[in-house]
Length: 83
Image 1 (spheres, rainbow, N blue to C red):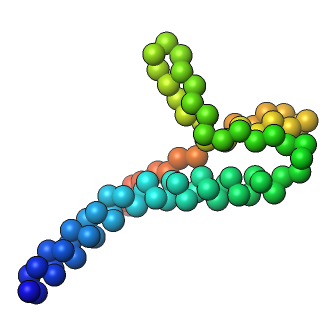
Image 2: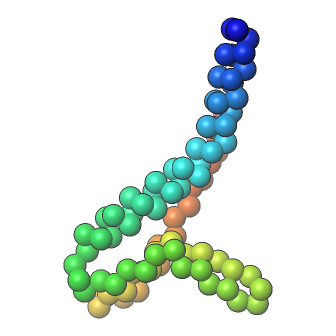
Image 3: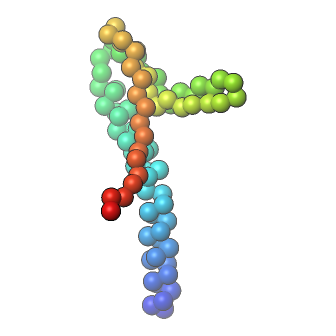
């Protein structure tokens, strides 16, 4: 019984370690989106835009259009370990 629990625990730890960057990225995008919703009505917000050209595509997280300019916001998560 103890060995089974240990194996299940280790599998869960490995699964969470592999999935954590994806969850952090989605959480960060939602957090930024919520903050942008606090902007005044003079700002227009576009989220999760997909652009395709010559068979290639790119995704932009947010574009904010305002009287002061157009702002492109692209979030990414760097995952690395210091040794």
